[in-house]
Length: 333
Ligand SMILES: [Zn+2]
Image (cartoon, rainbow, N blue to C red; front, side, top):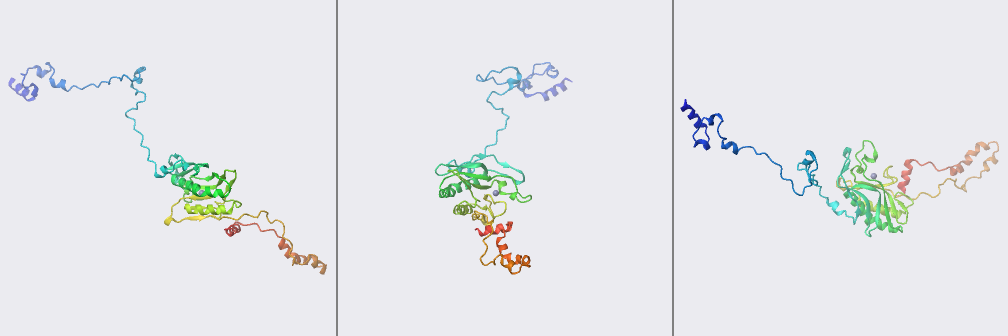
């Protein structure tokens, strides 16, 4: 029996205890603690000593667990890095335009865009500012194209009007809508912040120049037409359709083979006095009294025939239909 226990004890003994003679305490737990149990005893973590510069904890356990003021909790995720500014953004400096960046827009149905700016004003080469009213929400490349157009082409043209340009009337910029606002039509370039509708310009002397106003210098309007059709991919104005009679639409929509659309009729001024009075009686018309005197009894029947030429001459002009108006405008090119 003793021999069997000794053999068993010898098989289970660790190397550390092999050299020591075994006793019954080793089998029933009454002896000294074994060295390996003290070696592997779990360490209880203790809080680090409070830094001397940390503010004193106020009261309670909760406040003691709060991170020191100004110190972020270690578990809080760091915010994503800000996107790098585009080349356009870097180039559109305050020397050219006052156009702060605004957050991307994610609208319904594909509306919205990135690299957006709010075009508040265009800065002319002589440092004068052209206020954009109201400020236009545009993609950076479109805002840059507008600024270049005003700085390079419009400002010198305004000199011809005897003043300096001081403002741009913004009819519409970013607008999440379909083409011409027609239900079911494709998304307008306005929905991509890629288009600007220009109503006109303000001059430093207080005048307003409306680009579709027939009474504005035709030479000025034709110069603007040539300028925008050179610079932009789409130009729509009077006579393009019935949605652009009061403003000029400009956008940078890309098309196959860089195809451009330039539809703006520069119209002649309307007559100052509408032809409401009957025209003068033609000399070749028969005298009014002749028919009645020749045949007194048939006078009433003869009057309409005799009076017909004069009646035609005196007829007021027909009310213009949309078609005839359009044709008239085409003649005004
Ligand atoms: Zn438009």
